[in-house]
Length: 152
Image 1: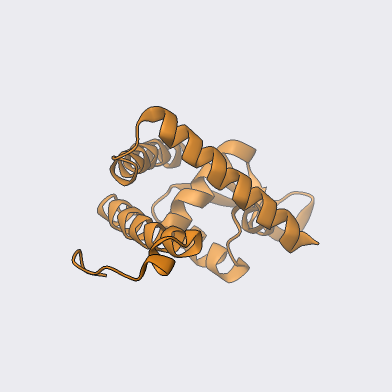
Image 2: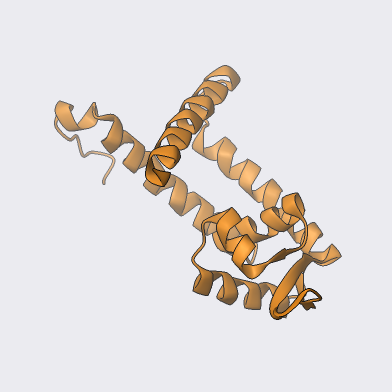
């Protein structure tokens, strides 16, 4: 939407429309920021999950990140090629692999954390720190509520 565009008030004042507009902008910022760092959003989510939860199977990583199994495999192939993760057969079940974050992967994740922090600053620039915290808390509340409802 161009800067000059002015949708009708009933649209402009609809939370769903506003969330969608900000989400689209956020998606562009994240995509561009990660691309400049040689990564994609899937890479960040997988590296962050490995850092937080430790070595995991591909299926477990998919569940932790909400990434489809085939996309997990493709993204892990890219990360393994860059030596950011290692795959090893699971000693308790040779049919599956255990994925481990490498030291290079941990360094890359730290770089992506910095990229994401910059993106957050850009996205939330007009808000003061308390407004940023309030917005994040409200969005978390909405996301948690709808995640619970979708599991029912």
